[in-house]
Image (cartoon, rainbow, N blue to C red; front, side):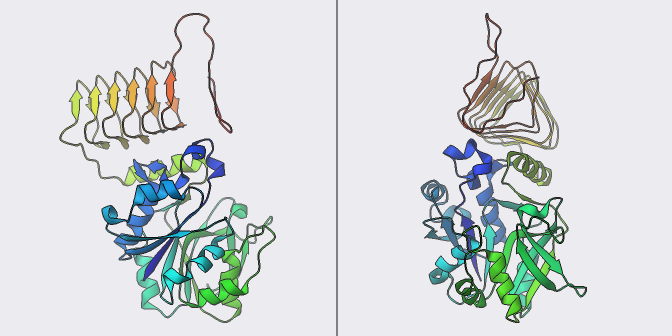
Length: 356
């Protein structure tokens, strides 16, 4: 069985971070989301993986290489324009051949992995399996209607008036009949080849599409709030480890905190679940629950809680607690000294700032 990961999206809802970084490489619990997706496939026994890439392809290629460091084999599949998930299946036909495969969106995080799903699919003669999840607002997703016997009646993409709250999670399993389906459908009103239309074609043609309603948590990390929520879930699942070469002095660190190699912590309190990255410095500070501080960061005389701080950034001498924040790379957050006592900012497009 092969894997197909879709990593071509531009991440407009995560701007300004995604002006300079592929959204699939933003870390949760100090691990890029795309790496988590690959590890989910690998742990389920899928090691031959095609990765569909778009404008951010060079950065993703540099991060993944040939996949050796993740014990997988990567085949790169360029997508010239974002023409829909079904289009991604079309252009991946040479890689996939007639083999069964699992398709996974590269910005999704799911509880429990996909090993059980793949076991179910391989043990049955289903032509496809789709994963569904009850969501609060299904208008942003493909939505499924089930018959009384649990089979799929109809799928619709991003409906203004959803018939149910069962959204399609970004995980799909197919046999070779999907290639016939993606060739048969036409672009939607959005101008894309929708995977929901291709799956509906399979259903209408009499093929067996099995639904699986996921009971655990699942997050599509399309927005900053989603990223923070995914980070909280991932941290809660983390097995805490304190690297032997980190330096901890006069600090209180509870049992749910992970500290990575080369970190230095002095005169600080850290409460988990949280993680401190490699070569990061924490001094005279409080790090609260559900916080991920990535590599080569400096936090000094500050308090941070339920936030993500990316690499090479600094948060220093801040009187108010930084909370529910997503701070990008090479960012400096600090208190101004001297007069006048004014707020000074350099903000990119689509930034948001809350001033207490």
